[in-house]
Image: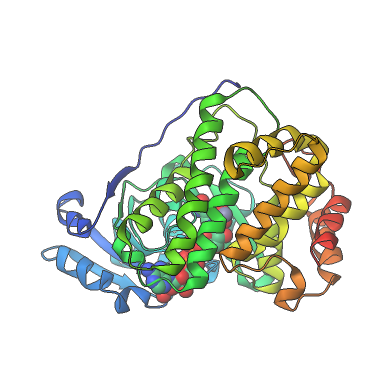
Length: 384
Ligand code: NZQ
Ligand code: ZN
């Protein structure tokens, strides 16, 4: 196991009916900006619950955060935050809304000329406004981490950044808020959580038994509960298990002391930036290809995943690896998320385009930083 330090300052408030806790968790002098997306919170009662809880608080609203949130939209909110002297952000929605609020929190106090530098150069920020979240889509883990992924629409640049300063102060997770998710978003969320786990688990063995065990439990939970969420959308326990799994998959815990990959995410962001695919869809396409191309390097952990997660026990290591990769792909399909570029109407031109973009960025990917743009091309050609 590698050395590590671990901190997670976010308070989690979990369960049905917990949105009303906003009134006790928010500071009395908070001047709040409620940040939300395209309006799903208005259709499922979340908005009304928030407004009820904010009786007596001073607040404004900013809506219209798009999936894969735009820098340009965030900067409109930053204007309002500065002008109205907002001192607390409340993000209500999925990862896009939360990531946008994190960027606003940092940009509002940024002293330099161009806040895009926070994203592009990963500038370490000195301060950020406090924020809290009401999560409605279990997927990204953004409710309990310091990461944010922002797209600059002007040049379709989708990049991640992060800071300890933008961990939410608290996050409210009411599984009932997820009953209204369309099947596609249920699938996206399960795939995203699955791949967050594999990015920190399907690397090479470091004898980190606790981290491996946590990761395997998250994966088994997704496999057991994910399909049930599609079949019986209003099953509370199913939603609760999925919601907690997604938070735990990317709040830093399972990644402590172990190598981390993130190549599937790196390639996936380029596919979203260029073709507009949902984040979860890109991961379902890329992961089986990445595991296939890296089967030597990752073989021991892929075989372990097959045994401990899918119950595959082949004597021959190659068969074990093949069957495990197929089982992962089949699970994504079972969740309703297609795993090949052609199923989204994207041709093999994507392989060249994404590989060229990564070459331009000068990035090498993966836990050994040995995935070259040429290998990315090979991965995507396997997924046409
Ligand atoms: O905009 P609204 O109207 O709220 O609708 C959203 C949106 O259209 C809808 N939705 C959310 N909750 C709902 C609901 N519809 C009905 N009922 C509900 N309860 O779902 C759609 C997608 O929402 P979005 O927030 O975009 O999805 P997700 O949570 O998957 O977030 C994706 C973004 O997060 C980034 C991705 O790259 C992408 O930009 N990620 C952030 C990470 C992080 N901060 O740690 C890590 C991830 O790997 C990921 O990169
Ligand atoms: Zn993700």
